[in-house]
Length: 213
Ligand SMILES: [Zn+2]
Ligand SMILES: [Zn+2]
Image 1 (cartoon, rainbow, N blue to C red):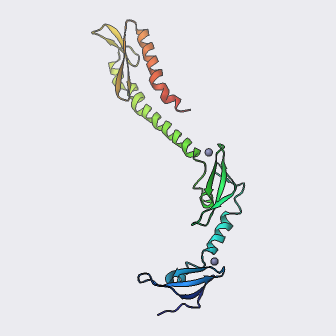
Image 2 (image 1 turned 90 degrees about the horizontal axis):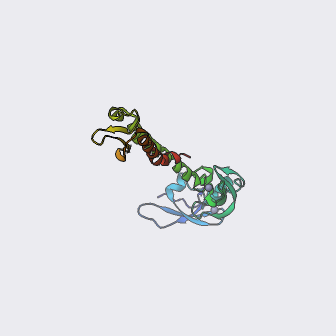
Image 3 (image 1 turned 45 degrees about the horizontal axis):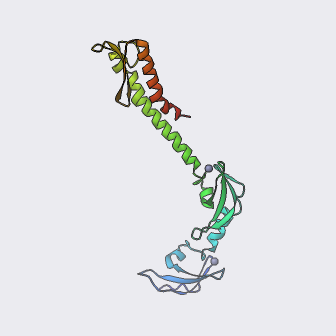
């Protein structure tokens, strides 16, 4: 049976064996900072734990606490430490976003660039993605459909979406939006039919295009 009593591992000095949990052995250690802590034997021996946690806290504060003020992280500027994360031992900073919002962010999330805005960055990106999705749908669905031979075959007017309707003996204006054909009416003169079609294009296609801005 190995006895670790008296051994020193980093800041920890082993005092006594603690109760076993299952088949694992645990040791009561006193840290240099005077805190007692119970550590699993293998973690002491492989050097994974060298203090009560104070070592890690100091390192965390060295890296994260004192050097972030006024620094830029994406759209965020770190202002001041407002809290400390109880488990992760990192400081929590209040940050001002370029959009004017103030939020609190963990120091490590700032340093690792996991958080780069109050959320407005993602919102902007979502808008861009959505606009692009709409536009590709516009191009793939509505527009290319209208521009391909399918309508050219039917068209006798030379204008997209305007054909001569034999039975009615009028010009028939229509538009296809995402595969759904919408009838715009029958007209005696070609110009009126073309205008109707043009108006419909503005009405149905404009919302997609406006999303771009
Ligand atoms: Zn300690
Ligand atoms: Zn923002």
